[in-house]
Length: 586
Image (cartoon, rainbow, N blue to C red; front, side, top):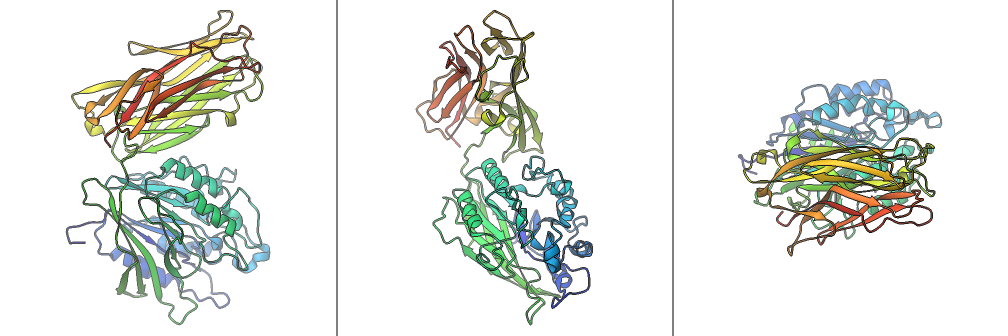
């Protein structure tokens, strides 16, 4: 890298700092303060030009999980000073129990020190140019506030590529067990697999990801079996097919870098596993003042297509001798290119009441994005009912300048208080966005989408005949009626925006089925702006209702549901109308 070049961000990763704020116990001598101060000084004085530095410490921040250990840790790595870098830490086994009294282990212990005290800091430190997914974190839902933000992720955009970072703390567990093992701390895999799976689903198959956790692959099958083999196998299965450019862990008190040892080429990069050992790893050796960290440097690629260059290095040094730090390249710099897949459009299927966040690699505004419904399916479960209320609602908001959060809700209720079964219902949401600097393009075309509809009958005992939404002259109207001609109260909300023709998005408007033009379609979506669902039976109850739309590079086709226990079906008058959005040029 020449003098004029600059890294977009650098990650310094090390683990097991083992701060001990009280007198030494047993054969442990506390070198942690000196070693960690030396590492901190190196990071602050690092001469690499960089716009953002991250320090990631995946666990064992303390030695015995006591208050004075917390104080010792904060004395060096406290996150409220002006270090010029962001600290993103997780917790390890030493942070969730008292090591020297395993039989009376203080489970969870001082975990709230990490989870609560650091969460607000991370949120504030990252909000300006990254999005940290704490606001939609569904990893742990126990009532105890100390579980807040147990797992978290954040992202950073470089050269058109969004890098994602996931902190799993102890590691990924294969189920939701919350068992207190003899080896305290392993129980806190609780819902980590769910969080990892949800995060990977939200990120997608193409964007590069770095995963951090405390336990790794080396120490399995021994006396303590820290990370069970079944969890290791499940982890490899969960991440298969995703663009994992690194998995970083500690616990082992040694530095090692290796390929996964399997056929793991996901098409963009080769997965690597890094044990970053300990910033206090040499305390049992004759050279206690040695330290080593993993340094990951990322810079935008020079290629006009975009992308990034990633470099992995081992940095080793000695306490008080920062100028003697040595760099060892772990592999040649790796080019990471993310295909411009789903550049302008995103879609995801959610349970009613669910939410998701869509990230873009350009700045957007309220005028340059639109959200809408692709399809929906609402069910009472196994029995049918009269319908009193029926509706779907989307709520969207900008998070920062590059992310859109969509929250959903749905209603299906009868006059006896029966409601939809969430587990058997879903809504597929869509967002189309474009850069706000293209807002004032001269040539545009209008695109419109339903945001919400809600219908409610007055009185009791209605046999639903039909319901739907009409769109005419830029305005929406709704209707719902029973077989006796009773009309429901109704409300419909929609949104329209102008899409610049310079984006080269093709809009095919009309009723499904819709066919794609004879071209190679790279991205596609369907936005609903009108529909009708009707049934011919006069004595209709409802078990489930909705629209299921198959949207692909070949076009759009839809199936309609308004069914009861007697297998009466929706009739031939049903339709959906909307915008099939395709892009053949990303």
